[in-house]
Length: 586
Image (tube, rainbow, N blue to C red):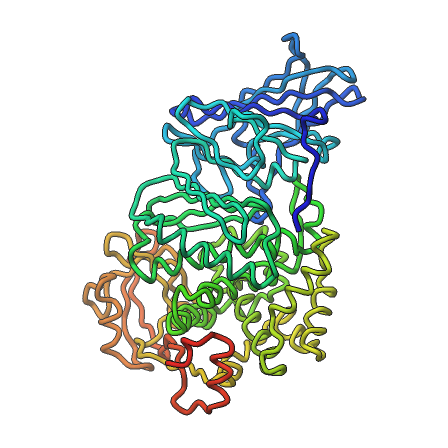
């Protein structure tokens, strides 16, 4: 539903920010915060350490400099820093004062800030100090920018100048990124609601096609919940060199994508899935959210074991929604799903870290991968997507598609959209079991709390699908990152032949059986051997030369998901009911 909030012109804003975006060559955003001191002798100011939706403490305060506090008449006030992201100011109650500082902004991502001569993009959590006691009070933001620059944000404008905006509280400000510059802005409507697409950067982006496809994604998702829960929504899209990413917000999202990735079909499908994913978050996460996110603590980690549902279910649906919207067919969907399945099978960490643990440890693991992550971790995006697939198929087949995982989301929406309280892990599972109409405690124990392998082939077979292995070279357990054609070891998989031979991340493989080998011919050379054969690898480790025997393991195949030639009429009908009419031709 859409909530009506009193306009701030009817009440005095607790905090008024002015953000100067006029010296892009310095990469410094100059911020002035005007406020009235509370009824205390000490004013507390905080800068968040993280941004909701991106679960890592990013220490935004490390980019803050030139901190100054004055009274309204220009008199300097005493201040001191009391924690990494907290400042205190000595002042008298009710004093009008100004806090001025600069934020260094030179990291282009959906969760940080980037300011140069072409634009300013910023997330308020990484820019705007706040007073804890004023978090629920209205505020304003004024942008100072070159005269030919415009401002795009989901916040509502205050006045007619197009540079001043207001928010009902600090949480809404944090949830509203800004794009300031000469970016292109496209407006369109879906279901009577206004939408904007702001595009910064150059490339082969085709706005007419993209907007038509985005409209179909929006309409498809709206149909799942019976409407759109906002009056206006903003997409901010940055076109960069091979960039990729997204971050959801209450009434907007930020996207980064490869500037030349819009003409090649597979790349463009990836873009559509990204849009579908971030847009779906306006329900799943922003309005249906774990209890731990009901009230954000911006000073520290906010722990939950339910990110597998928040992100995993969204990842499952971000591929289905463009399919249901008619933007690609079932064959393309099966190819995308095959990639997820292969990634899962190729991750030894699936047998080490459970989904609930992966969710809880997102703050220290998912966003800080290293060479051992593949052996010790399991992505709650990836495994969550596949658990969502299994739950959806189980519910669908038990009720002949009269119920599905979507009914779980609809019940969560009905229960939590009004209260904003958030669900507990037990409350979430209770709703899943209510929709499924069965006790799924064993599934929860095995696949959410435990590390049992998912019964993917069993359940995919029930809808007439099979995993067909494709030819692969013998197994070494080596993963490489290519650097100018050399074979730089990125990771060594646990319990692999390479681990037994003593190779480690950072090594450079240079020869196979005494002959030089490069990234271009590594796989081809391996195909000359069989599992069980012994080869000799030569490599550099910390600039020292090593040469040892390695016994090749059984090939680790890449699977292709396809409709089985032996699929029954009933199985095929289930497949069509799930994926749509294009599945009939598989």
